[in-house]
Image (cartoon, rainbow, N blue to C red; front, side, top):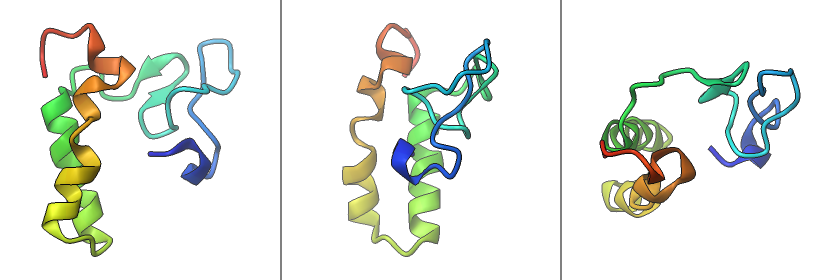
Length: 79
């Protein structure tokens, strides 16, 4: 989720400050809300949400194709 669309403008770091990297849905109190979520699982989750908002299937693929390159999954062996 783009941080500018997050009502809280980001998740929270362990010290309570706002995260400038992760949204409130993904990151709370310095930890991922779903720590074992793979990039592929996130892609499917986001595609489902986009479809709920009326985006056509081909657009959901375009909007989610870069998820594996995000910082959260860069060093992860799972995708």
